[in-house]
Image 1: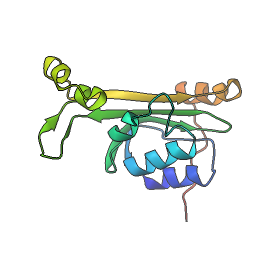
Image 2: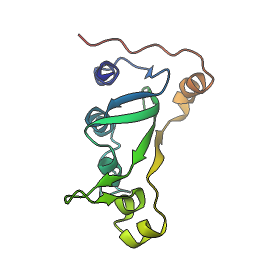
Image 3: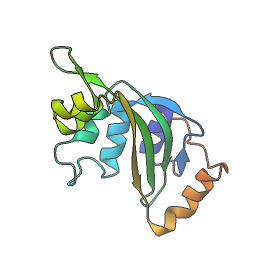
Image 4: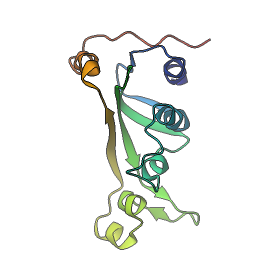
Length: 139
């Protein structure tokens, strides 16, 4: 499904995925950087980028339109540290292993959302199940 991400980067907008898909995490991070989401001043430690691994990422929603609309919902799973020890979602977010031991969360979902008033009509179409223009395949 790299074609969708490539098409978005090439400016074929609006674009959306019609159903949940597995996309490349590196491609998603590149898209978020291009859209000004990463790096984010509210997240100087880059926690969002850490959860978007460079491999497959389960994405349940992706809508991109100009000038600013961006909706991305994806799954976060527990990971491993450099010694291959499991690291839960809370420890990954906060760095607090005690909190992780108290609440052993192994997966969660995250959402990134930005919209201007002029792009809400596009989002309503997506949420209402009406078809958006499909992203054109890259050559």
